[in-house]
Length: 230
Image (cartoon, rainbow, N blue to C red; front, side, top):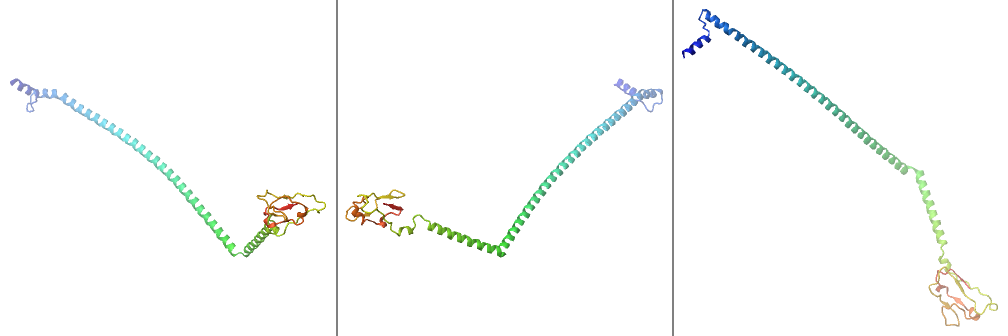
């Protein structure tokens, strides 16, 4: 305890002591205090320098980031402007094409209206139509008459009786043949009426005596037979 007190007294300078022991104590502590101040100042200077460097680096990074952001915004704005310009060009082209189509439709409608008005109010066109109608009617009538008069089996061909031509009984053979020429084979035997015989539909004549009164019923012959040759 006593030794500790002495040590403390030796370590702590006595401000009231005017002797040389106090001076020696101050001289002993003076270099240490200056070193502390110098070290603190150096540390503060280093800290300030480091903070300044850090602030400078941060400012540079923020500057670079802002520049990149500004460049990105510029590119984005340019792309948006190009896109808007293309959209406006397409819209303008569509509106122009639509307007041209509407104008073309209006012109066609106007031409149709003018044509209808000209057809309804023009007398030469009406006269021409009447003339064409008369010509067509006349040609139709002529064509009808042509076909009516030139039919192969018209009713005018069935009113007269076919004429029988045969040689005289002196020069004719006993049984002259009868030939019937037709376009198609007859479906059935024509009804022939021969006096003095009981045969109907026979193609042979019994003799020259029967030829004198030989007749053919024209009404019983089918119409497809065009000509009879004996």
